[in-house]
Image (cartoon, rainbow, N blue to C red):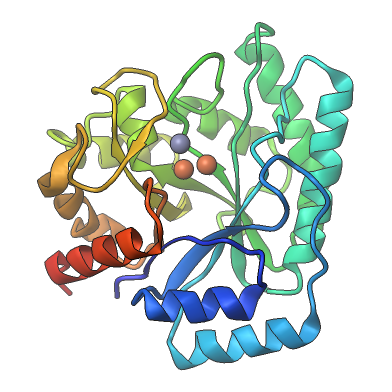
Amino acid sequence: MLYLGCHLSSSNGFAAMGETAVKLNANTFQFFLRNPRGGAAKEIKKADVEKYKKIAQENKFGKILAHAPYTLNPCSKDASIREFAKNVFADDLKRMENIPGNLYNFHPGSHVGQGIKIAIPQIVEILDTVMPEAKNTTVLLETMSGKGSEVGSKFEELAEIISQTKINSPEKLGVCLDTCHVYSAGYDIVNHLDEVLEEFDQIIGLNRLQAIHLNDSMTEYNSHKDRHECIGKGSLGEDAVIRFINHPALKGIPINLETPNELDGYAKEISLLREKYQE
Ligand code: FE
Ligand code: FE
Ligand code: ZN
């Protein structure tokens, strides 16, 4: 089963996102629970959620993916920024209980000069505080490109975070693999996809891989940049993306596009990928 969707605006609520997804021929989607810059969260209305659940059920949606605000930095040097991250994270996870059984993705953060040895325990500390809120949600760490001082561009860093947390069963804590980010981080999913997935399996475990961000990249392999490109227009290329979605180890994992598109562009990419997907 191909669970494929894209990032949608949450400004009109869950049912509206569900309806948009159906129009795009998507059966999952990604969204923000609040302004991506970290502002106040919108109220979640019961009737809206009920309406959404019906749409999701009728259209056999896979798990949907909430994305934490970009400003959430669990390993900032500044204690007040870490405190903000903890509060937003905990509040988001409480909100996720309105739509049980779904996924919440976050960036491990940027250590800005503190170094990885200080950053990892800070990320772990926040996770240990907030994870009890995730009663029916799986929290995912996103693979990062390694721009600046980003944590999480190496599988070992994600594995270390996971192993140090107290609540870390694969049902509770997993990974979201971003194709643009891993390629920029130096994992050659164009020429060595099998080997990269084997490495992922050995270091993190493929059972932790629970969501995919499918993006082409504007920058070259190992560039440590984070510039998403439309499918087929970047350094990964259409063939590599198609091989990726058809890889047997990745079947059934919800895939969301974060390509620079409006809805019509997403519809075209979804239709192309569905056409090239082999059941
Ligand atoms: Fe992200
Ligand atoms: Fe991403
Ligand atoms: Zn990105």
